[in-house]
Amino acid sequence: METSWIWLGIGVYVAFAMITAFLSRAGKSEDMQHYFLGDRKMGGFVSAMSYSATTYSAFMMIGLAGLTYAGGVGALGFELIYLMGVTLVLIFGPRFWLVGQKYGYVTPSEMLGHRYDSRSVAVVTALTSCVFLIPYAAVQLAGVGYLVSGMTDGGISFVTGTLLATVLAIVFSLIAGLRSVAWTDSLQSIMMIIGATLVVAFVIHRLGGVGEFFGSLSADHPGHLSVPGNGFFSLSMFIGLTLPWVFFSISNPQVSQRLYTPGSMKDLRRMLLGFMFFGLVYTLVSVIWGFAARLHFPNLENGDLATPMLLASELVPTALGIIVMIGIVAAAVSTIDSIMLTLSSMITRDVYHVAQPAASEAKQLAIGKFVLPVIALLAFGFAQLELDLIAVLSVSASAGLLVMVPAIIGTFFWRRGTAAGVLASTLVAGLVVFVLEVTQTRLLDQGSGVWGLALAVILYVGVSLATRPPQQRASEFLDHVAEGMRKRKAV
View 1 (cartoon, one colour):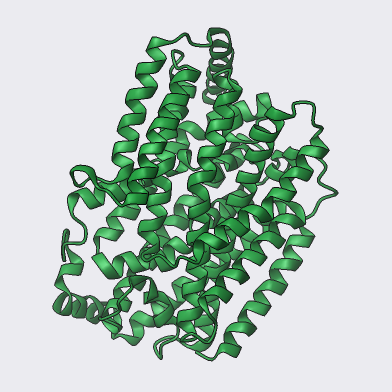
View 2 (cartoon, rainbow, N blue to C red):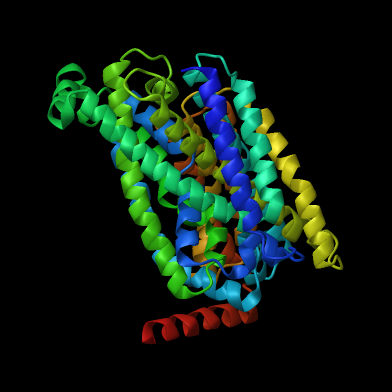
C-alpha cells in the first residue's frame, strides 16, 4: 500500500482524536480522582467502549490473528476462555466500586495497602505492576510498528511506527487524563468494531464466500480447524496461555482501575454488558482474519505479519484497509494510555505519597503528569527489541501479575489474610515468574504463570496463617462490602 495513503489515514485519525480529547475536558483537573478516574462519573456507554478499547489492543487484530495463523482454532478457545474470565467482574466489579466510593481509592494497590493496613503492600504491588506492565505497553507499541511497516513494505519503518504511537499516547493522556482517554476510546472502539467487521466480510466474499472459505481451509490446512492441530497448542501451552487471561480482569490494574470510574452501579452493569458483546464480535473477527491470512499467505515467517499483509493485499480495498489500520493503531494507543495513567497514578499515590505523606493533591498530580512520558519512553525502548508473536508476549507480561490474584481475592473474601502474606506471595512468586520469563525456562513444560500462581497461593495462605491479620481494618472493610452487596440485592 502506498505510504502516502497510510500517512493520510493517520493524519485524519489524529485530527478527530485530538478534537475529541479537547472536547472531553470538563474544567481543570486539579486532583487525582478527576484526572485519573474521570471524577468517578463515567457513563455506561463511555465506560463500556473505554473498557473495550483498553482491553482489546494490538493483541487482537495483530496478536490473536497471528496466533490463529500460527496455531489454528485453538486461538479461539484461548480467547473465549478470557471472555469467560471476564465474568469475574460480576463478582469483583461491584465490590471494587463500593470500596472505591467509600474510601476514595485511586489505584488497586492503594486499596490493597489500606485493606491489609500496610503501606509496604501498596508500594510493593505498585512496583510489581510497573515491572510487568511496561513490557506489556511495549508490546502494543510493537504492534503499531509491525502494522505500518508491514503495510508499506518498510516504507514506514518499525521505529517510526512505535515512535508515532508513543507520542500519541503521551499527548492524549496529558490533555485531560482519563476523561480524554475514555472519550477517544469510545471513538476508537466504534472504528475498531465496524471497520474490522466490514473488512472480514469483504475478504470472505473475495475468497469465495463462507462455504468455500472454510472448505479451502479444511482442505489446505486441516490442522487449523482442530486442537492440537499442527501441534502449536499442546495442553501445557494452552494452559500457560489461558491462565493469565482468566484472571486478566482483576489482575491487570489498568483494567481493574476502571471499576472505580462508573458513576453508578447501573453504569457498571452497562459497562460489562457492552464489553461482553464487543469482545465476542471482535474475537470472531480476529480469528477469521487469521484464517484468511493463512489461506492467502501460507508461508509467512512471523504470524504477526498476517494482518499487515492482508490489509495491504489486493483482497482489501485501500479505504477499508486504512480504516482497519486506524482502528488497530487506536486500540494500541488506548491500551498504552491506560497503562501509562495507571502506572503513573500508582507511582504517585502508592510510592511518592508514602515517602511524602504531606504532599498536596496538586503536587501529587504534578508528579503523576511528569511520570507519564517517562513510562512511555521506557516502553518505547523495550519495544525496539522487536520480539516475535505479540499474543504470547502479552500473556507473558500478564503472567507476572497473576501473583497478586490471591491477595486480591483475599481482600474481599478472607478476613485472615495478612500484609506479610501479600508481601511474600508478591515478591517471591513475582521474582520466580520474572526469572522464568527472562531465561525462557519451562519447568515440567509448564508456563511461568502456572508456577507463579501456585507459589503465590501457597505463600499467601501459609504466611497469613502464621502471622496476625489486621482484624479491625478487615472487619470494617468487609462489613462495608457485605452491607453494600445486601442493598444491591434488595434493589
